[in-house]
Length: 372
Ligand SMILES: [Zn+2]
Image 1 (cartoon, rainbow, N blue to C red):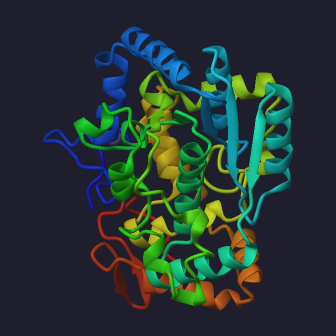
Image 2: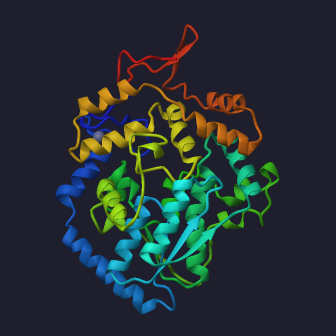
């Protein structure tokens, strides 16, 4: 395992590679944002996109996929600012938090948009999550499949010409040059970066008794008679998670230290009790935690230096989202021991080594880490 010399991301993170100087693709993305991308030209391109969209719209101009989190507030604010009529669409997590519900309701009310809170049968969600967790070690796969497929399906069926997604993850968290400069979320992007493990809804048909009709909401339409432009807002305007949180807060978004679930940002990952599990499994598969993601962004924003980030990780030590794990096991009707044994099955032995009964990562970022 090697780590970026500027931030603290390891080269095991999907999308990350290090150049000859040991600088990662996410740090190159930041450099692109600061020095290479002409944001004035990008804004002009967005205005052209808005005009083209309005010329094609027969009803709503655009769908904004929202969770109620800070980024979705920013997406809606920007869509409205540029004169787009918005249908906000949510994939309703089966484990929405109280603060998540409150923020979503406030967003719809304060920003004044129509909204669909799309709910899949909780029993289908449960079985799909069980299958994805046991077979692929990911609880987040059904979530990702649903939150991408539902807005795309609705856009095609309701003849809405534009979908406005949030950040371009390849620009913020590491991707190759072509991907960093792209503005489009299409089926090719979904296959490579949608966290879908190279599967589609059809693949999961029959597992845990899931039927084709139960999986309808997860199915991205293939042949369509209506073309939808599907773009990242973060390709047109310089993305900054802290500024998004501030803009959202000014409009009524609420968060606080008590809402911190995982990572170091109390304004992120707060909508759903199960999101922390998606991040937690990266420890077994890739040897890093959500703190590495959050703190690396803070380094790039110039808020802290690399040494401070490492000190924060060391001071915090290893933590599991115990409450969320318990909630997930209750949802599944399984004991906690089931969760831990599945996690263990996905420990990546390319990076983990067992010595005297204790698993550890040779060459870990912090040499005197307390392995448990
Ligand atoms: Zn880096």
